[in-house]
Image (cartoon, helix red, strand yellow):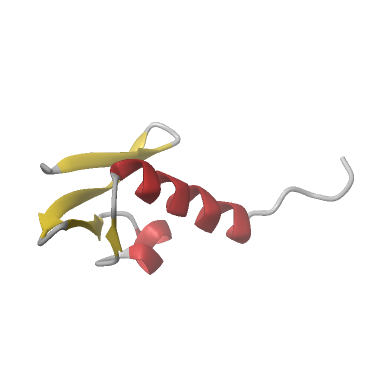
Length: 64
C-alpha cells in the first residue's frame, strides 16, 4: 500500500495513506469531509464512498 491522491470528477479531493492493514482517507475538500479519517480496503472503495456521498447530497430529479 502507498499514498495516493483521490480525485472526484477530475478534482483532487483527498489522499489515502497506509494505516496498519488499511488505507486512511484524508479529505482536502470540504464536500468530502464526512469521510475524513475513515478507513477503506482500497482506493476504489474510497471512490465508491465519495460517489455515494455525492449522490445522496445531490440526487437526480425524478423528472427531467
